[in-house]
Image (cartoon, rainbow, N blue to C red; front, side, top):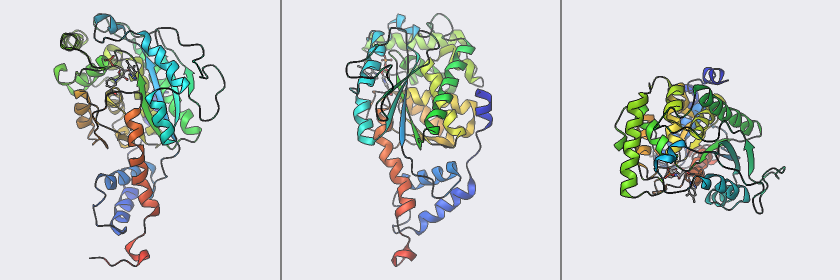
Length: 363
Ligand SMILES: O=C(O)c1ccc[n+]([C@@H]2O[C@H](COP(=O)([O-])O)[C@@H](O)[C@H]2O)c1
Ligand SMILES: Cc1cc2nc[nH]c2cc1C
């Protein structure tokens, strides 16, 4: 399924992009006055193969959750159980992602792709295991293994495990798009997952982990120094080949990172935009781009995470984030805040009058 998905990813449609550029020039506003929204509208026309592209509605957030063997190295102060507990919170509607999803009118799908501890059977007020109503958060059980192995000691995953997680992401993308989603938003939850994200970005960018490792949930100086040393040693030990993205994901990645790479590939194959959240999403986006360079055409960078690796990854992908608020929460929160910007960029092409039609004089 991974190979057929990659093979289905085509380059953007140049005539649709040219039509969007030409239309932008005829709308009742000074040329270029919508800044980055204009190029975004052109990119989305190229992805859709149509001008104007469809409005990115409805929106669906997919939160991939997993745990990490590298937690044993003391790279985060939070107990591993928080991953499962936060799933309970997502399903009960009490997390920040839920508040922002309600505001944006987006659905929330939580995917257990590798949680290590027991999931809440039914969160208070939640619907885990029940058949949810249309707008309630939904849980997809797709656990590949109970957390990764410790990447400081051995490869985090086998290639088969990394593939299984990526194919889960592809499957979730297909199901959400089949159910009508016009845009997918990436979300993640995994205590410790900024460590593999930093390793993935350093591996794909070929740079020192000091440039890609951040403070995650907010680690102190000794923990930060340990984290950089763990990532550096892991890259030296595994020496992953950036031309082999499955190998990189297996060596130093995580199950949610691999699944997010799959979600992005699945969206790109269906010519559906995927709005990226923070550092975990952009590390997965580098893997997706290594699998299929044209997948970048489907990516929109929602925001610039405070994690330094996010800026490195966005630069390599050639993506400018839509908002920059110093967020470092994950869950899909930054992507949700950026969603109205994406919708606005497309709505302009649908609704704004041209100089001709409105009888407004041009300069
Ligand atoms: O989205 C981001 O850029 C981001 C930055 C820092 C932390 N996080 C979230 O915090 C958790 C990982 O942090 P840590 O310190 O345990 O590696 C995980 O659940 C992520 O969703 C997310
Ligand atoms: C409380 C908490 C919420 C989160 N959401 C995403 N990552 C998280 C990490 C923690 C610790």
